[in-house]
Amino acid sequence: MSPSRPIRAADAPALVEAAGLLAAGRLVAFPTETVYGLGADATNGEAVAGIYAAKERPSFNPLIAHVADLAAALRLGIFNDDALALAGAFWPGPLTLVVPAAPGCPVSSLARAGLDSVGLRVPDHPVALALLRAFGRPVAAPSANRSGKVSPTVAGHVADDLGERVGMILDGGATKVGVESTIVSCLDGEPRILRPGGVAREEIERVLGRALPHREASGDTLLAPGMMASHYAPRARVRLDARQAQPGEAILDFGAPMPGADAAPRRNLSATGDLTEAAANLFAHLRALDETGASCIAVATVPQHGLGEAINDRLKRAAAPRG
Ligand code: TXA
Ligand code: MG
Image 1 (cartoon, rainbow, N blue to C red):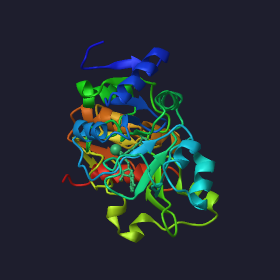
Image 2: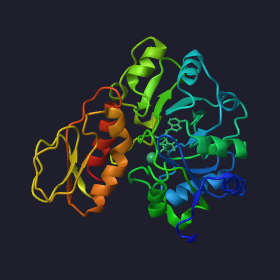
Image 3: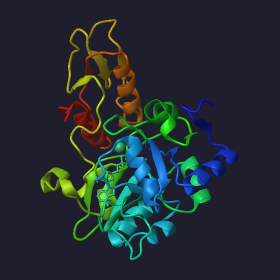
Image 4: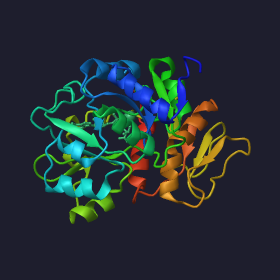
């Protein structure tokens, strides 16, 4: 094992060691069903500071505290009826609930960026759950990439981005969902979708029995300070809604391939137009096309329904002017 690529198969001894590293205040990257997370003991402010340092992330970004089950989440946050219904329907799974922090909530104020609320999630991945059970405390974890880069969906991406900055990278193969969790705030008043993600808006509205306002309608960026416009940035420029590739462009298709040069680097999010498959492929395909050195990636139109809302949100950010 090279110290700069600390990837380990997630067997029982590795999990014990990983829990020990977390307890010692070190960073452990681990797979979830959405993307790989860069984990630290959420109750240890210094350990959490290590996340921001490794990611070179602006420190006003609150982090999600990951726990093994609803019982653990109920010790950290105050759940209203909507939050309980959503947790019951989608946990373990790609849903983060922002709720008021419980009195004496042990999640460090740094992980909460000083807010009175806390972002909580029970991930649906055997390695993540085994790590959380072995550790026994909440694990703060953003996606395991440097700030502004696309999120990692395989262990090798984490090693490429963060390498020697992590104590261990637990390898759980490719992530299944491929986009981050949907974030719903259940503070006072109507629940709000702060970030579209792995659970589609339609599924959330079905469980709640009513439609939710769209984020754009609120205009309140401080509620989800992580939602910076240029968050998901490959090196290459990204051109959306392309019908045809220009010379020199790499191509990201959805469904039928778009016209373009034979030699153009090309990936298809889903040849059959399946949005779940497209979400799972999104970040890995963006990375692969970026690594060809093409100056621009032409991206086909992706429909906006179901997981398309999350896919288009990430694509729009990837295409936004760099700040
Ligand atoms: O799928 C995921 O959610 C992945 C995996 C690792 O779990 N994690 C992830 O974390 O995407 P991150 O740090 O990249 O995004 C977390 C988002 C940020 O946009 C942050 O602003 C929001 O969650 N967030 C966390 N706690 C919050 C709070 N108390 N209030 C508002 N937003 C919060
Ligand atoms: Mg992220």
